[in-house]
Length: 279
Image (tube, rainbow, N blue to C red; front, side):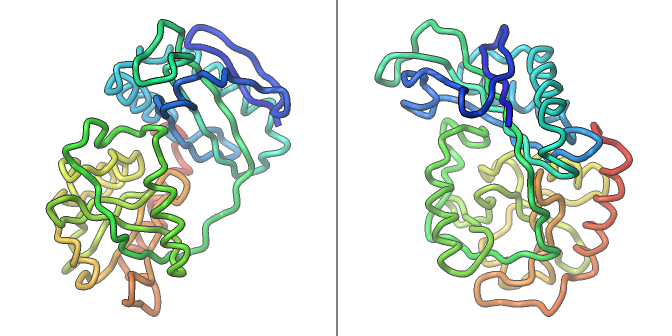
């Protein structure tokens, strides 16, 4: 596997076992960075333009100079070409962008930001999924609320907890007890055939698949109590790797099969995505 490693100005392909980043990089020492995860198919990296726009927005939110769009696109293309045989028809790409080498503390130095682009083969998700409500909360007032930061320890802990409960994903509420998001997903519910999802003000990430579902098929952004998971007719997740993923178990509640709205949305999203690699 070959990765692209460099700065916001330049870089090159490197074999994975030879790829290096400074041990003083702020992305390592204080998780001072942002990232994007993209689904890769035989047609390329899906929704690349939207992901690059969000990457730049996240970087600016942290006070890091936004990446050079052209450089990232070159890196993405080079990585896809170099690893095409190993990826096959389905892959997962990670674009990581950090503040670069810096002091051993929160203050930044004057180094150029670090850019790393990597890809690996992926396994398709099962047709349905399960969730568990985590005992922790998202802080919708945090300085990094809604930023796709590399500071993911909270998500790692919550996801491991969900796996211990036999679930695929953990779902979290926010400080006022409203539904927020999963560790790597946005959450939708269906009530009386109406598709609802928490607003960005809840503290959730502005997910790319979430955005496309709202644009393509409609839906309402609405504050929802965390208890809605026990009452909704249907629940589904969205993410760049899952697309639209129907939920058949939420905590102690189960469904025999995906609901009609979730099932139809999943099929329609897949069809629409197959027609346009960069919507």
